[in-house]
Length: 257
Image (tube, rainbow, N blue to C red; front, side, top):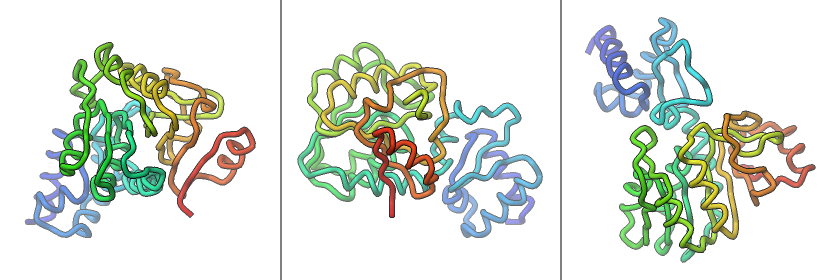
């Protein structure tokens, strides 16, 4: 396939899907990852796409960093989210009851759980996480129920929170849109806030999983203060001054060596 034809295909795909992984494009166009990377570099120079870790998103002039479509967030900082998942999984013991709220980082954690464990009870409100966990037939997977959010592939509402409140959870892994020392955990996903708060209220050990790009950013809905969280797991790119500042104020951060 000629380069110009590939570029047209990529642009058409992004106009429809808004975001794409490089591996998906390589499979779709039957070319190598290196070829796709060169194509995306050329299209970025043209101004029609924006490259992100693991793929690309459609270039938009009014793109709000904190309020992106699920598919865009899924691609962005993918390698960092995988680092976070690799660290977070070490906190889990066989046989525990775990909660994962909806989000792109918890999706990466779910993939690791399927490979690493045999006996877990996992509670979630995320349809994509449910689909991933279904690959391990030994898991007890509980879907919360509630109203469906088609933009985030999650369930929410009073029924969802009622189901979540019936469980005693050993460890919860929470993903949010932003976290800062001043504002704590924040999110733009209106329906997800009550879900997170309910999970936290039923959990012994509370862990936030967040790649380093989310630190010292804030969205418009407050979830809870950082002091309500036992641990934050992030990637190796976290600036040392942030780790030091948080640590000096009693907020624990764990990242790869």
